[in-house]
Image (cartoon, rainbow, N blue to C red; front, side, top):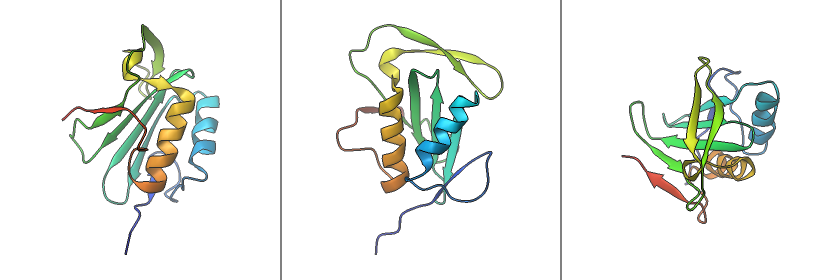
Length: 127
């Protein structure tokens, strides 16, 4: 029997968010200026989504303190700023360590729905 973990947005309702509604929730948060979102799974994993509205950092962590793994865009050139964290800190990342926001939405939807990266996704393990 396959058991899919459930996910909640850390600072929202404790009601689990499904892959069918997670993108709407993320878009609403981004539209309201909340550019950093953390989701936690029923198995203790964390999924981070941080965006500057054009590109996004997507990280998957197995447990607290885990360096995790993150989506990449191999060959992307440049650096993007405007990644405003919940504490007000503004970060910048090399574009190769972020993905276009549409791709980030696809990755989050897949991870929430299946628990793993899409088979065609590119990511690096930071452990």
